[in-house]
Length: 452
Image (cartoon, rainbow, N blue to C red):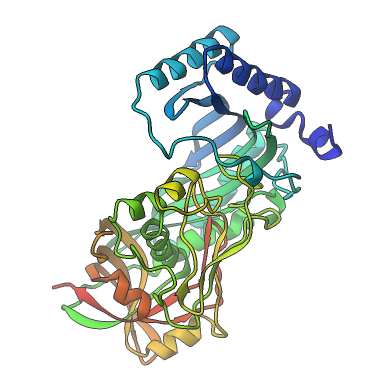
């Protein structure tokens, strides 16, 4: 066992050797049931979630999860099964179930394990595990500090939906019958708060959160609470708008959803079904030439970092869009074979998808927009991936002469993703790194805003 593995061996309170042995035994059992190949993954995690509301403890949840997922192949016939019971009898029944499913499944020429040569020879240390020794009473105290800071910020904070402190510590072992076995451990910690502000015009709700692999990288409890309060307060007195066509600026945490739609549009399963407006767009310009979108799966402490994907394929840094041109798709081994291509190591999704910023900050983009809509919240999912049509409920702020004038609500923004991508005017430097898609605020040249 390497020094890294030794350090991680008791992550999530589980013996790593036991997990490795379990996965190896599962593959051997699948072979005895007639499987020609198989892959299995086991995940174990422990965690704590503490929530308070209006200064009182709301919920305390201690989590201890175990899970095994298995896929077997009888030639080109595939079967899968899973269980949360890791006792050997239950595991054997899971293996038998997967093999039975495979025998009754039609053969698929594209089915099978990812190619053996794509497995990583060395598992890099991505520094993903930073345990937080947090007793229940300490978690409650932190949550009370978060909510207390929010409620004390202003007398107009009239109510609270609560504050939550959560942490988890997990480890993952994957193996297949190519002989590959890989392991990584990771932690995830968060602080969050949602409050309600009220004045004579009505009530408004908003929230804030901080999340990180390393608890030392979290914002302070007071900062999270104050931001939640200020975000709710600034929405008081919100108005509606008349229908118009204007530039739209998406705040960073909302802009990530735009690139989430891009990922779905270039995902293999949508491409081989030809159910995407970006089908057959590889090598074509889909953004302005300053847009660079790339994966960074090996970022230290990254929330989307991983050494290999769900099929054991080694992850690697790569461009999805360079100079505005689509460079690659998001493929698993199955979808790649359907398209006559090779997997991109994206079984399970993208890894730290990063949209590079330009040389401007958010204030610069507001000035550049001059007059338009600054969107800070989206609602609903009116997205048609086949046509690219986009329509979502929104709220935010009306901007005039480059400055925020007043909050707005109960509006709908609409456009077409193809035109929206081409119409990006700028990407700000206010990078939001709290998720798997990392971007700054995004200014789009023109969209339809439907209101009164």
